[in-house]
Length: 430
Image 1 (cartoon, rainbow, N blue to C red):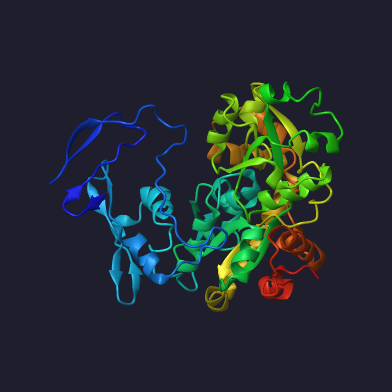
Image 2: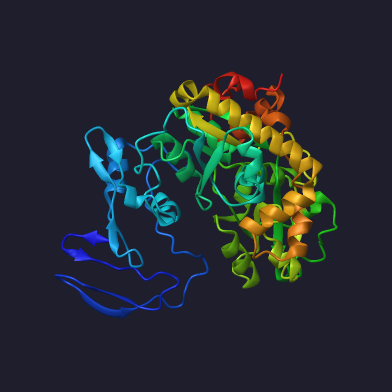
């Protein structure tokens, strides 16, 4: 990274040593010790509001103008700022840029906008999880999407919802699949986009550490739901931050026991590997994440499935839409044929997944989750095929219920994010 006359090389998690020599500093053979759990190295620049990522244009340009050095590529990568917008050179369009620059610069300053009438779509996912199975099938089983004339170029935003939304706002990606409540919040704050497909129902699972459960005074995973909820008071729980479906579901869940999310020692965390290692090492008591994603600690016994929303254990959250696909309104207006084809492909993916769960479980795991223990994967994936809205549509009652829960949690109104305003007609269940 370049500041003034100095160029700094940051050690990567796959590198042992690094150094820098500049006008004011001469550092040789530096390293990170101990190495953090999360890999690859995350480097975040924060801006905008916590819930809705709509920062000023000047901030986007500043973030996009930061120069990033990557030792393996041997070059400085930087978007070019022009008077007409933000562009980038062809050399920047690499997997590294997807995994790092889009995350580092919040994706929002790295592209000029979506191309019209394309069959190759730039598709962002807020996180790599089974919540996005039917979208990930575009990579593991591309023949389904190809039949409808769609090829998806998928970018993983590594658990950062705001970056995925910012990617849509800037045109870095054409579509983003993200948590439903993040969409309604962003639309309420003025985001010029709508939901083009409603994808999943609630898929959250709370996993507690076995050590923590042993300290709960006899409450177990088989105890009544209200007792398990009350036992969570004061626990160190991680999940995605305020304004996300996981957080809203967590708050609704705690109300079953007469509590709220504020009664937890809550910490935002977006990385499943970090969650599992933190639970193993008793740094946190548990996490709420997509069912099956924390399967490795369930398999080795260091974690226990405490409450499974995907299994229908929490009826108060069951009706709400959990994830959806959004696109900018100008893109929707200019690319109607592409959206029609993509929706048809997503709808067929839902049908195929329900008809052949074993086939798609194997292909999605092999491509995106090869490191997960097979038994743990199977235990979580069994809830996935029935978790998708048919036809990528949602009934008005489910959308209204989500806004009701959200308004109660945030104390805000959502008059700009109503069913009719926030969901395209094709995604409204008739």
